[in-house]
Length: 275
Image 1 (cartoon, rainbow, N blue to C red):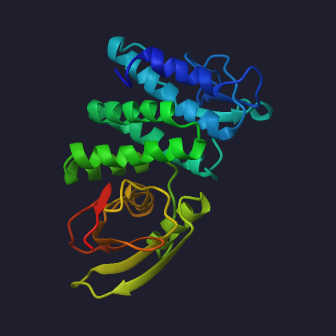
Image 2 (image 1 turned 120 degrees about the vertical axis):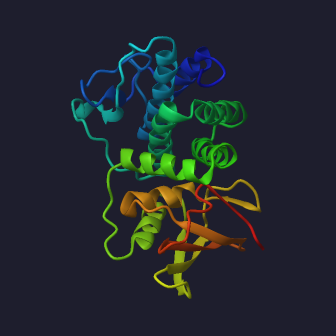
Image 3 (image 1 turned 90 degrees about the horizontal axis):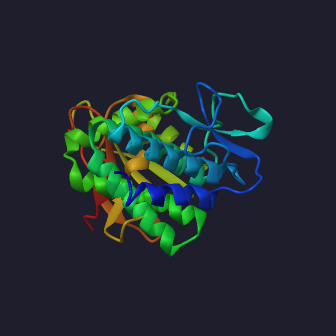
């Protein structure tokens, strides 16, 4: 079962909803709101995005008991655009976190149910401690990175994160996919700024020193959740990076990223500080 109980998840959906609101969660295929979001309305896009993630987890839990439960791709829509099947690109931290974690949950449900349950349990516990929207969404993203790092091998993480990236709209990285990936994270508010600098690497390798200023996700002063960076790269290149030499800075984090060549995938979910 996802979360502590199905009742906990259903109660969370009720907390997110309002009597009258402009946003709905609907099936991208049918335009209807399937159970447990049938008839629910939400005050803003961020809360609706969170409800879509939670409702998807609820329906996956039901399918463990009854495989005949219909699979729905849940999307957020405004009342004035009901019937639209494509959600708008994430523009805020909550929207971005739930887009990524929602896609991750879909992947984990197929392959690694215990990891998914770990993340949902951590989220429901966080709900009891804070009502801050951004903090809750960041907690879900952080715990997802932590759970993958603790419970899956690097090879399994690479497979899961690539499948997660495939569930999100494809991005064109042009000539610099890493810069484009970080720009996306800056646009959504996940970081304030970034600096990239080429460093010497082995034959055929492209190695960049990355500095992230005001990077929001954090596990501790020694552990940086790099899952969003990796997912954004995989949306553009489909090649798992090699991340090393992570250090905490006064304004965020710095680490080395190898995106081409024969360097094996490393630190795909969490980068450990070496400084």
